[in-house]
Length: 154
Image (cartoon, helix red, strand yellow):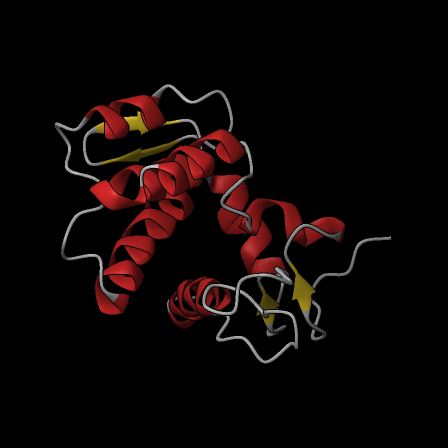
């Protein structure tokens, strides 16, 4: 039985609501005039100059995991302006594009009610909860902001 609205925490990667929130979920996103296989592809590529071979290689990566690994292996070629503020700005634009381009995501996001949305990564203390559950959860915050905006116009 599905709930109309939930108030407990929603963890990325788990249950009815966790899949679509993940940057690894199989939802194409049009970002920067390019169609990306996932929002992870788009985000990882955004770390590099558009004319770089790494940017182009990420575009054709076969999976979100491979896109991430390509970016990690080529870290030294990252754009120089990839500071914390810029990372959050770029991720927000990409996640908003993913949200706006998929009616399913909009509907499922609203169904999360007022639940806290938690990027359930035990290794990422910036985008997720981190190993001690005290991470910043910046990706969860982006999704909660988008949800709040949708709820405000209804």
